[in-house]
Image 1 (cartoon, rainbow over the protein chains, first blue to last red):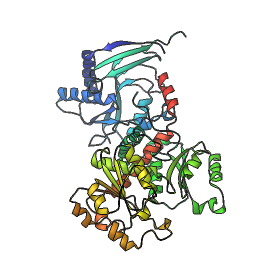
Image 2: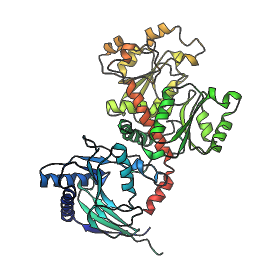
Image 3: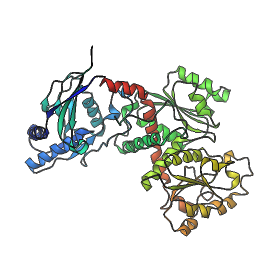
Image 4: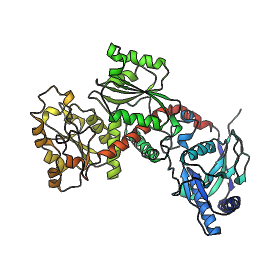
Length: 186
Length: 321
């Protein structure tokens, strides 16, 4: 295996600015905060969802209900990736999601398969009147007809590259990094 | 990545062959699965398309239904085969039954059998995953796991706890799975029963032996009360059921005399008034129905982890990412 090169794509300030703008875009899409529910995808989407809810509360004076989704059991590749014994919490907001306008928040949108799983899982909990997708980084490379509605930053990354969103709660800081594996002579 | 599973192999035959990390992996996974049974739609698609055969050669209500709920909540397709309703009554051997099932392209077998070693015997001969749902006097690993999970839920830990198994240890696979699992996780295990109901040289399993239930209850933090297995007794183990209750029954008076906050488990089915009195079984110390609830989550965790494929393949797939 070759060496890995890490590159900082967004520092804390850049990520905070992006999240603040994304929060405003969400409120604009929804024409206010009525019926808005923010659902973060485990793991790092949950922390980003909390930050977006914070921003909305700061700007609008109302905090939208937030929840979390662990999509592990809805993946289409269990046999290939092996079981993940540590499942995160799936928690609906107390008012549920029926007839609500749900924003799915994730850190990175890549193949679209996570989002497909999240849509399936949400359908088992209720029937939102609208679902939007909000991601901090859209790296392209979709395998399904799924597109985010609100994006922090578009970054074209190749198959040999990995994008890591770091959040203070799990990683000690807020940042976005690109890791490129030097795959050696090919 | 720390998310890699440390369990599984192909099968779950007993807790004797698992280490502490593997047991904890199952318990932590079960913890996450509990919530699924509280959802409006109690089902996740993770085992969609998997076929699981429940092969029960012995009577069972709780365990069979618990496995079936677990399988259905993971979206697997299930078939139940009981010994009375199958070709076993026509003289077919265990291996032939299993090979015929294999020929119908199944993925997993959950087996309950009266002979110790039946689950391993089957696991060695078919490529499907095999889960032992109780084999003779050997092990009943999912019962052991759900007992341990229930204790952990109520006491917050296993390490350092003193757990006493009371009753028919001789005939009990539940006792063996408890002893292996609990000692692996650092608990101290005691057994208390008339000597006729203890295996020869039971001390070699690393347990303390109590001849008087009063001493056991003074020592223990948790009591796991076993059923007197009349169906396995050809007589002569205890002079009478009434005497057993008088000498070894878990009664309210005995609990009150200890003045301690004991946790009481029973794997069911209970003989009320024999090994456990009704006011204990329905009382504040008993967590018997929590055990039943946890049973479904534990079995979901085991099936999920076993069905997930081999860890080596998972590692290879991760490297490609």
